[in-house]
Image (cartoon, rainbow, N blue to C red; front, side, top):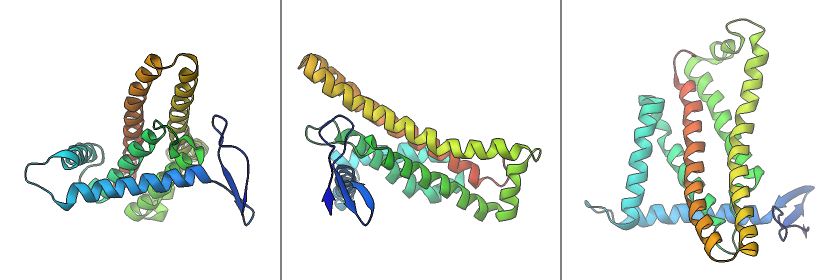
Length: 227
């Protein structure tokens, strides 16, 4: 396994080559770290659950309750079966987005491979659930409605979903980290600190937007009729 360049310049990555494939090592490391943090937070918050929540239990209960309310409002009663996926996705994105704000770390979501992979997972699940809910023939038929030529527009729309979903998250997180580095070099201390606080907010907002759009796409696949 050989290591390539990158990782020292803004937007670059430490590369590894294996079996003809190229891997972004920093993305892999940060992805594993993000997953580990989410698991640890969940274990710590639920290991000694109290009737009156405190600390991480209180934070996770607030996040889970808010997400369950959004799931009910957006996806309806059928959405509850996807709640574990939605909640895990949100927590992963929040933790991953904020990792890049820690010196020496990068966000796994500043790599288009990560965000596109997550977006493709959501869109593929949309089609699988749609075919399971309505049947393959009935589901595929809606791409040709209201008229057969509309299949072209509908296919373009489906292709655009993962692209827009992934690039929105990737662009915002990468731009935030770049600005943080640039401001740190140009005007140390005050401005970077203010931008750091704003970036924390942006990371949460971007995780929420990605999750909400995912719920919106998934809700269509759970409907008995296509609207």
